[in-house]
Length: 165
Length: 165
Image (cartoon, rainbow over all chains, first blue to last red; front, top):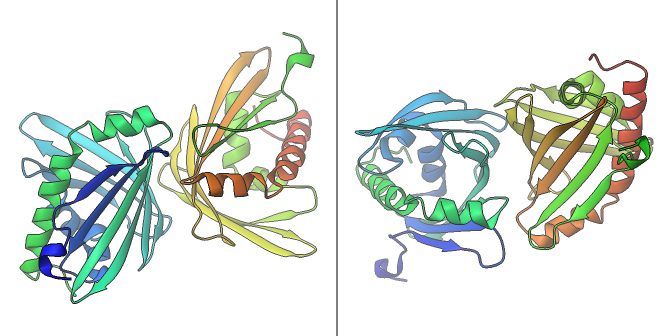
């Protein structure tokens, strides 16, 4: 597999039979670095979301049974999110996620990190909602911009050596 | 509506289109009492599960962003469960749930309590899984015995005045 086979742009898919969004993305990183990039609040705030926002960590307790809250801030206002961490382990992150602007909506998010060898890791992420309407609404919210720009920022942090190996 | 219209035996339904189990059950209680019965660890341990088990609370922090762990004990052994509380409010409880014997399986459980008037409240519970296989496996695990016997024990606690109004 050459570098050009890598999924360096995220694949975002709607499951045809389940209210699930699946995201697949490769990073030049180890699984442990990707766990750290998602669980360390300063690192997370440095890359998550579209370029147009800055991120404030409101609460952060990244462990199995812990919880988090953060706010994205742009020229138009603030957008807050919160959830709890069901599992924080070396192989899997499982957490709930709510956008506070749609408090009834809760997704159950699972991330797995597959070591591809050669210094590359594939992230398999899924967000499970309790309705297709909710899932489709999330897909149509413009999440792809935040995903593509956020992961590009994470690529840059990894290239800079900002994520401890 | 007469007392005979009350759902004093739980209705357990598999959603035909979504990997969800829905449970509906009426209680002679207020919504606040049902929240308390699920969130107070001593009360919860006193009613949850089939009659054949006793329940040990291993960890309990019932608040938005908290978490829990408990173990059912019967003559054959111990069965442990854990999860985190995404939302603990007067109108809704949202939490994750894993049986430690199937650590890959995670359900997202939501309970709403509808005041029917006349001293009755209807519980609407749903468990969302990420596959139909997982949902069906949970349905076929004999969960109905624990549900029916557990809620009967909760009825008795309510009748005895053990759940503060």
